[in-house]
Length: 306
Image 1 (cartoon, rainbow, N blue to C red):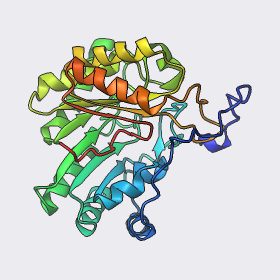
Image 2: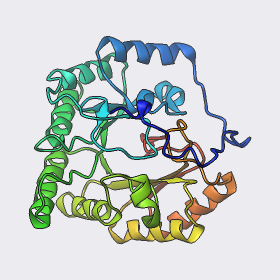
Image 3: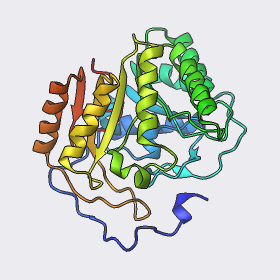
């Protein structure tokens, strides 16, 4: 059942509706927004930029970057922060999706592309082949385009944990064999809040995925992201950054969580710009090679910057 028709699980908690003065999304040029939106609609594509109503999409489109959402627009998991529709996806995957994305990349003259997907726990390979196929199609159009992937955890499908771990590794290996320029998998929040925020995922499983990615393809940098404002404490954020570095994660993004609707988990705290600056300095001291930290930073924000 889509989340829009679900009763508000958080109705007893008063949402923090008014945004602080330092959160001012960039609208971007209307012409650039319309160009991308029309092309996406014409090709029957999805982008996380539009599905999640990212506040930076105008800025990213102007920089010739975009994040395409593959595997359809319906997610098999029900994370409480995410605006993407939840439910039972159509098992008939759009066979031409990869070619249409490659065409859009060419028409829009994109220089850096991020490929992400909804969780597809209903598919045998959890959508791993969709990533490799999409990368291959884009490279046929232009082998020089930089492609980053942002994947789910590829976990599930069997009760035997040993077998599940092996299947996860096989799915991950298929994506990495396509040789993306960066592998991204988000922790989203601190360990204490995982169960409430990320349905079907676990903190240790996600850290394990990032660790295995480094072992399979040490030449491909790994990346993860955190949303702040869900009730986490300062020391928990720092400990999470340390945990990411313990699995040799090289890139990290930190941004403020903004509640998409009353059906989503409420904001508990708005961290100030100075806080994000402090976390960026701590992350750099811990050894992250690239850090993006700010109220409006998202997983793919300025992804094209080396």
